[in-house]
Image 1: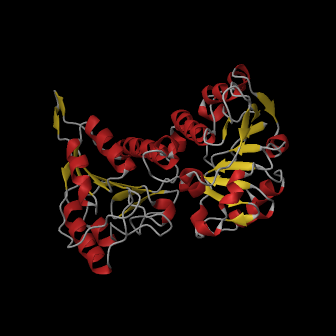
Image 2 (image 1 turned 180 degrees about the horizontal axis):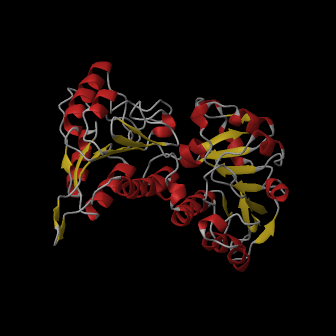
Image 3 (image 1 turned 45 degrees about the horizontal axis):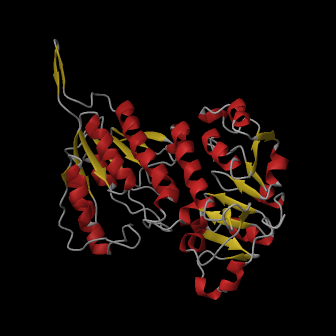
Length: 392
């Protein structure tokens, strides 16, 4: 069975879906691995490393015709048309955007797994690419803030005088937010953090930050570890309370996102006006509308004396480790499908829809779009049949 690793072509994307380390392990299971020429160069993985791991270099057209294709970013319509009917695709697919990608994949008969749809359960942790990449985003966001802020982060004592530690606010204590807290603290910043989920207080304080208790009158604990949207009244109270708190902050890193919805506005224009000159806002929700309405996606702008950073792909700025983590996430997911039926037998690819992780992340299968539809409408009988790719 052929597994193809494609070279990413989206602007600013430097990651690769699998590293030589992961390839070496998969080759040992009997997979034939093809890697597009120079697929890992931008992430620091040369062609020779892939060849040493047992992979064969190939061109784009050959990769797209593989039984199994892995990638970081979703394919274009033109790429989908060139894929093999019955193939399996594993990638970030942005299924909430409803841009026709899933419909096109179903039309050509591709069984596609969206890495965003991996459930946040204990069993699925090793496959949770959203978390592995958010962890890196939180780290890199703090480094970006330190680069943009015109002063030191830690207390600095010099013969010319001393500098106070920077005051950092982290909004949202998910994976990215918690890593941002830890990184900012390592750099010597004084950190306060806020989240609508009260259970995050202990996590925030365990990292040495102060929890912002804004007294909103309601909490935002949702399903699967995510926050839920607050009522309109609570949102207004939140915005007003944050506007007051942010007047004392030098750096704000905002991470609040709700899957499938526009990012909530946490930092209003009036709040930005009230911040200190030279302050920095890192808006990790920039691609999804932004937690600040003044943020411009993909740009760094200055408004009212405040620098707003709207970068949309922080993991790609640390491509070596981001690729390593992501490749392991995919390999662990693939391990649920690519395995021996019995001890000593050859590996086969089989999509078992009775497996909760596969069932949740499989967004197209059998010529149908499964994402967003009741899973009970799909007969379990299809789970016992190997995919067309497995039959090759």
